[in-house]
Amino acid sequence: MESEKQSLLCDDGIDNTDTLYTETNTVIHTTCSHNVIINTDESVPMTKVYKRRWYVMVIFCLFAMSQGGSWSIYGPISATTEDAFGWRDSDIALLTAWGPIAYLITTFPFAWLIDTKGIRVASLTATFLTLMGAVARCITTDPAYVTWTSNIGQLLNGLAGPIAYGAPPVLSALWFPANERTTATALNTVLNSVGSALTFTL
Image (cartoon, rainbow, N blue to C red; front, side, top):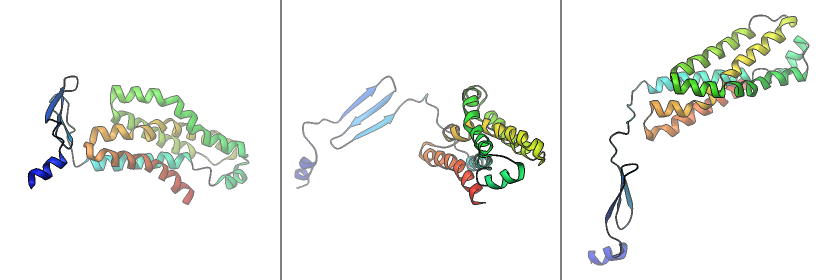
């Protein structure tokens, strides 16, 4: 009876075989019902897992939230700032536009920095730029100077954008095992937009 069931599930014409792909040192073991892929390349480095990877992710998420929140700070209070500083809608639009403009400026330099110096140096640099952008906006509230300091602050904050938006996959690949990388990348990516959402909420 068991042999009859087996013959219905397996095609007798399919043999159990092993196929070796020398380019990747991958063995595909073919059975009657499925393929089993086994990586036999011992030269491929495995990600060493540390408990502090979650701490690293939280710190990066806080940076991404700060960068996203600082970028969208003027949109929700545009009417108030226009009254306080004599700004126009075009001034608010420029303050918001500094994010994408600066993103284009530092995309390739930050990509080079990650490749040559590592994600730690790139993240610290981006965090420093976000901090300096916030500090620049706090220098003065004098209408004669606040337009300049606000634009400089927005520019500095925008320069950090490529790390806040583009570095999460690199962080996940370096710190997280394969089964956690999708979650880590998603959290790091979404938290930047959460920072913008919190700005509107506040």
